Length: 204
Image (cartoon, rainbow, N blue to C red; front, side, top):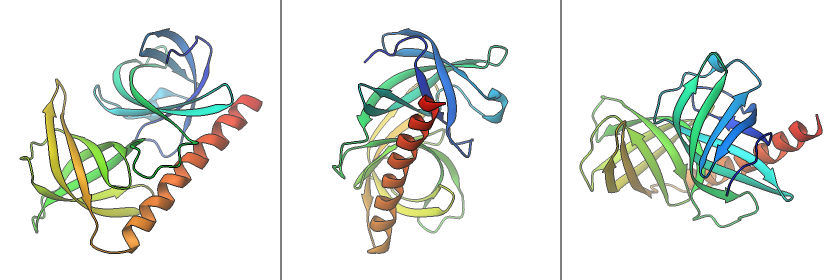
């Protein structure tokens, strides 16, 4: 899926508290350059961070899971690579929904909190980036900071390493009935927020 120059898009990074209006200034395959309408200094980004990009195409809202490749503060632009995307009309709970969430991971009863960035999440699993190395099959406790704190327990089932971060595939382990309902409501809220934001952006 290639975005056209001039396309209106939304950008989300976990350092920001909202969606940011942006315009596509250049596109080549799965690599996209976007110019933020607001000051890029409002975002505290690093290369390799997860970025969420939303756009409308043929009356469908697409939410893309991206990786930050670069930024030019003088031009107020970000360069991102689109890794995968989902339609907001997809109602399946087990589809990984693109997010950019600041989280903290701990092992067992340890008080040591390790920074983690959630790149996508579904009802039963999530993909997480971190500078910290965890062993395969390690059980971790996560605090996801999304305005409220969602506490999740998950086990590492996949691990890879790139230039900037370790990437983990995790299976969520539910220990109560409240948490899955809370996560489901949060994912539905994210979809609705993207749909309404892009509709208003297009109208204005």
